[in-house]
Image 1 (cartoon, one colour):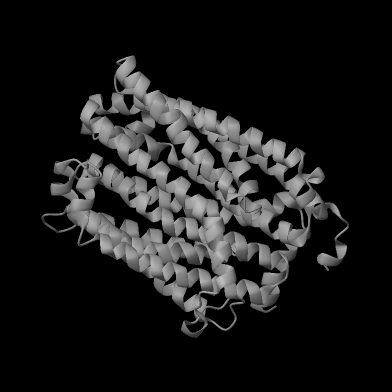
Image 2 (spheres, rainbow, N blue to C red; image 1 turned 45 degrees about the vertical axis):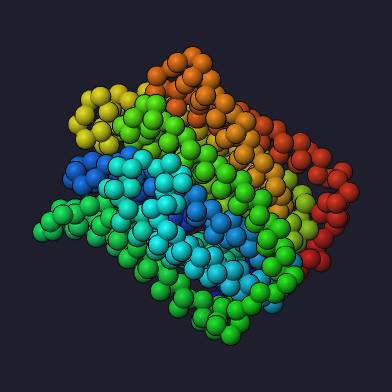
Length: 470
């Protein structure tokens, strides 16, 4: 069986096979991929504390800034992936190939722009009200992270293209190589025969590991057997594809950018009000909650591919079945994760506290609130897979902004300045915002799905479409 035949077989499974099997086959490799990334993020945080090579708060603050900048590449990948998956579902492979080349061309431009942050790093960080001690201690870390952004922007687009084809197992295998290189180098730098090791060395380890994926990615992209082959000659900025990708990506970018910008702003407020130790604990709490969050995001990503291909193929009834099965699956996983994390919160915090009892107490008091909202994050993620699959990125963008500016910031301000609450206000604000946003997103998606068959725009999805799947 040729690679193209295997690809078509996977497409047939997504469009006609058992839905639960399709969800697991597409999503589980992404789960493992995200967990691998999550684990080496945790490992970095633990190494900083155990090896005493820097301040965890500096890593948290600068990583939030990096994530804010990274939203543009991630948003383009999301929009382009939706378009490619829909065209594969429509069996318009040549159009999908053209879209993939347009997407990668945009990624090259965006990746190059991120390098401009390096010469202007200090004024940029000061503009964001970054603590001076963080700038003094971790400027090198920030600069290397900008180089990482160049590499990961290209990698995330490659992942989006492979995901749109359903090739998520390939993503998992590649990331195993990344995780081995990353953890190996980080361990060597932190505990090997080196002097003057700082957190910058951790960023270098990440850069080398991600560079490995980029090299393999380029080789895979140019192979003649790749049905969405990308070569220097085929790179383009097709106006039709560019317009659709921007239309799908812009709301995602605005929502994610403002959300991450808000988190950077919250970190600066928390630093002034509660001190850097609380900001470090807040970042560790986010990291501890990262395991279920990454699993949820994986089903969101995998689900959107399934929805996009079935949308392109006109399978309305199948999308309805997918929605209910996926919602039950993701909400069950989220509920189990909530219970386990809440029971083990003290034990998990012990991996990050550096044997500092005060630090452990702060981490636990913030995290106990964050882990409670995991269930609502889950139902929100399952709902987003529908919105992304239908290209309704504006809905997810608006909900990201409502989460931060409608719920989180006002709640924190009230607790911080009105009630005069201690640092635990940071955890409560996250709980309130994620819970309310999850409930609203779930209800919006439920209404959309219940009205789908009677919606004039989508009535064609419920017409007998056997000829489309042949």
